[in-house]
Image (cartoon, rainbow, N blue to C red):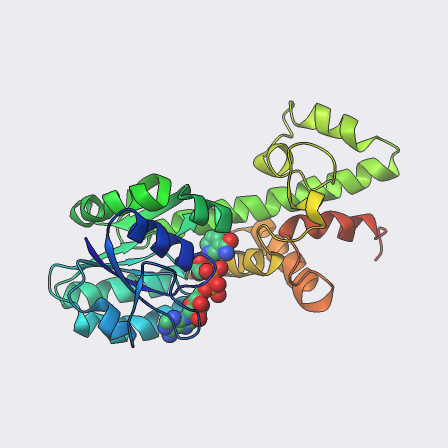
Length: 291
Ligand code: NAD
């Protein structure tokens, strides 16, 4: 397939490289990052999009997606599909979907989970919003870049699934970290705490697969000095998107609101920026009830 790929950062570069390695003809564009091997470099986003059957975006946020969409949509041929894999607000996804439809183009919002490791290994999970027809057209590319693609519904449903999942993740990580810090103060050994909780009703992915306590459970960023992994900054971004969506939809999300505020303080006022999101554990460890 002829593919345009816009945004060749930490996630986009390995995803584009995997498509090229699978034999697709990939033309890439990024304002800063270099093109990976086997991906041809375009001089602009419009040039990368011209003549492509599918244009994939992997960009920082919704504002940049809207800007890039305004450049690529006029360059794309009717019938081609614009597929945004970035994590953006639901409103931006739906607005760009409407512009694509007006221009006779297909649209998918297809944010991912799996991080940079999953992008490099081709094992991402895609959460996809858009029509059956567009999903079927891009599915072979999801198979190359990932292990699983779930068609969640119409335009915007992929972003909705992503922020709901990550709101649960942020809340469970905080709950897991504060429980470890409490266990410490109660004199309960961390390995015993893990043994009990990971096989009991308090278990979650945060505890079982990504344990925030160093030296316990499977290897995780806690065992690597809390180097990300999944940066606290990105968790803050996703929790902020979840709150924007909750406000727009009038949904009551008290724990999501509190999780966003804790990650905001951690990233903006404390030492959380650039650390893994599980570094909430040393944060709680160093605090008392009134701090
Ligand atoms: P990144 O900052 O490494 O990459 C984004 C790239 O977009 C950069 O190289 C930047 O130069 C480029 N860019 C910015 N404006 C542009 C423009 N106008 N035209 C062309 N290129 C432009 O970010 P990333 O880690 O690759 O993340 C990309 C998206 O994936 C984000 O939306 C993020 O939330 C999401 N995501 C990231 C992870 C992760 O672990 N890194 C996991 C899941 C989802």
